[in-house]
Every structure is written in C-alpha cells, then in structure tokens.
Image (cartoon, rainbow, N blue to C red; front, side, top):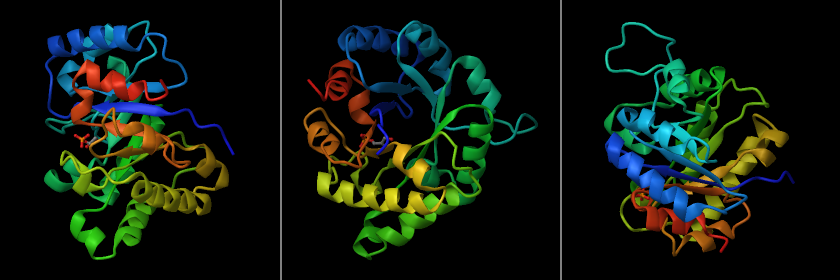
Length: 251
Ligand code: 13P
C-alpha cells in the first residue's frame, strides 16, 4: 500500500482579518516547530491570503483558498480565478464544502468544473463530500457519497493529485463527531469507489481527510483508522493552541 502522508488542514471559513492571520500564524509556527511527517495547511478567507502567504514564508505550512471559479478570467463579478490563487501563493483549494453546496447553490457539476480548473493550474483540490442527517437516517449514505465522489471526479486521469475530505454535514460545527468507526466505514467505501475510477493507484495514494468537530482530544482515535489520512478542521483551527494540539496528534 502506498505511504500516505497525513494532512491536517484548517478551514478558517469567514473568520480572521489579514492582521489576525499574521499573528495567528506567527504563534502557530512556534507551537509546531519540530513536527515532522505531517502536511499542515491553512485556508484563510481570500482577503487574508496575501498576509498569510507572507507569514508562512520559509515554513512548511501550505496555503489553501476556500473556493475558486473555474473560468480563466472574465466578467464574473465577485469571483476569483485559479491563476489569481497561484499568484498569491496558494498550493491548495477547498472545493465543494457543504456550506457552499447548502448556502451558495454549488452542485456536483460545478464542483467537477472547479476541480478540473484547479488541477489545470497546479492547485491541489481538497474536494469535500458528506451526507446530511436526513440522508444518513434515510439510509442514503452510500448513494449520496457515491454520487458526489463520482460526479466530482468525473473525467479525471488516474494521475490527478488531489485530496478528498469526508465531512458529514451533521458533524460540522455541532460538536457531534462521527465516531472513528462511523468515519472509517465511509472512508473505506470511498477508497473502494476510487479503486474502480480513477483506479487502484489513485485509490491507494489519495489522502482522505475527515472533517466535523475534530478536536485535539479526538484526533488520535480518528487517525488510528487505516483509511483516515488526516483532518479538515473548522472551529478548532482558529486558535493556535487547539490547532497545534491536533497537528501534534503523534506526540
Ligand atoms: P468544525 O470543525 O467546526 O466542525 O468544521 C468542520 C468543517 O467544516 C471543516 O471544513
């Protein structure tokens, strides 16, 4: 099986100004110095990206945006193109977060266009999937996840470099984490799906992160599962203490 380096990514959502990003990252760098074997990524809002890029210079911390538009440029008021994200220093971009699907009308089709645009520009997509509570209770987990994964990755080559994130909607910001067993069950299902398309090599090397109320005190048990390769963290990624506690899950 391919060695998969764990990823701990912080999704800041609509929190922190540029100067807040700067002081947060200075503190975080101090708290995670010496940590090895973990890929750390932060995803500030667009307006804080430039200051965040400056603050992480010379460190191993990666920079992600929280969204992008699939077009190269043009009359798309309020949108941000892939090349603009590259220009400001991003290496990653979160795509299809459930909040975007829920509140901003994103569909599997738009997610797929965004994933392709990101890859074309050398950005690593962090593509999010996840079921709602109603879907889980209605026995639709497999159907929903399978649709989101298949449509989101439609047309990609087996050499595509991306990260997946499983974020059950009912676990986001609610304090209700999926149990490591519940998460592993879905991660394994995704891993199996990926074996069919894009293919076995893609499946064994692609990191699948868990997201939904991840904290320093539950990360260890999640990371102990064979198909959980990291975490996409919301609330607990906003304080250097709690985020570094998650990054240091091996300590
Ligand atoms: P919380 O960690 O606040 O539940 O958010 C998870 C999330 O949505 C990360 O993208």
